Image 1 (cartoon, rainbow, N blue to C red):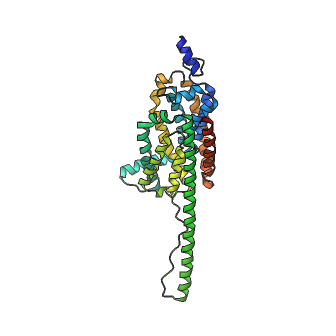
Image 2 (cartoon, rainbow, N blue to C red):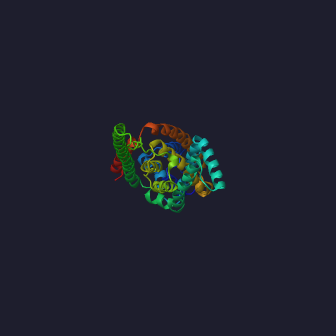
Length: 335
């Protein structure tokens, strides 16, 4: 081993010129990825900030380099997370794939499952194209602890804004419902007094939308929102859930669509980077990548299981508060 190789290995914090990341670091990063990819707090932001905070210079330096072992290591993080999502939503995906097949054969959409399938297809396109074209450049540009910390604050405001918008919409809907109910009661009283009067109008008990009621263009717009998650600190699940709330979905449907949408995007990102893992960049990190993928998959499965229940009755507010506080503390740390 040459002296230059020893210097490079020491700078990377490793014991050999090829072991660019330790197994215990791979386990921790896998757990971080599996949790933060589904929790609306930005997986990219946390995998940028936490290594710098822990003093893992071998990882932090690799993330902002145009070519490094980190490109290969990301394959495991993405594939492990995507496979966990596929396992959790396996029945949904069986129906969705079957619905897309039958819809394509008939050249029309006739069932809610078919509509959901095409919504996912259209929502995947913006992030897929943009990610293939710009993901590498955006990663190098924004994979800095200070930048990720700042965008973590931005992510908190996005989540907060989604909740404020949703609550205002609910207040307006309740007010509209009360007005319509009052008018209906007045009309009913008038009908008793005057049998010739027209019947009272039907009242609306709310205009909560179901996932299958989204128009295809709305699915595409949610996919456009997902593009911003290519920036470290902006959460993929968070921004797509907010986009769903803005389109009138409740938290449960918005979260379900977000998690289903994440599956093909994350899996495609992993497959797209597979040559990096099989090529020279993967030398010395393939074992660590497999370990990280396993831990990322387990953490992602438990995370989506927890969150799918959380959003049946709860909101994004705790995650917004976390992002705002954590981002502010991290900015003070790295500024």
